[in-house]
Length: 217
Image 1 (spheres, rainbow, N blue to C red):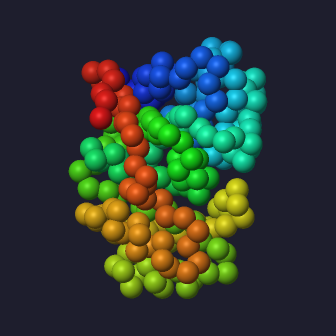
Image 2: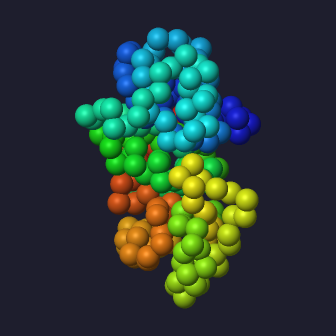
């Protein structure tokens, strides 16, 4: 099964878990795009959505789905998003699409977080994919020095400005054996807005598209 077919498999499995007429959070990325396309083919399945990026908001509106501001809601039952890496402990690296801050906010607001991926994203230890970190622009080199002191190799994602007007540093060369501890440590560095580690708030369920079909963790 080719990669797109695996992504579509996970996306369709997520759609089956969405109650008719629900208001959901929708993430960002190629696998999520398959999910939004599935919503477009099932008009009326979702009444409203909260989007983690402007790109997803545009795609949802094109599918005929009303996009709400998270501040308009008192609660959010379900959030569906992808990941750049995942472990069987459901810890994630996210942020390849530079939407990590809003993704983390929506994940924190949701009672349940479904992560949809293909099996190429599964790893034993996080860190093969460079860890994205959103930083305040004026603090970029300050934060980079702090990250280098921790043993990572920070690379500025030049030309990338997040929906929040910030910059992204991608941290290469990390082997993240203790994701929760690292997430907490990085959150203390002045100038960091969000760390692309989702360990303090992991996924509740992984829906994994494989050559043999759907796998659930």
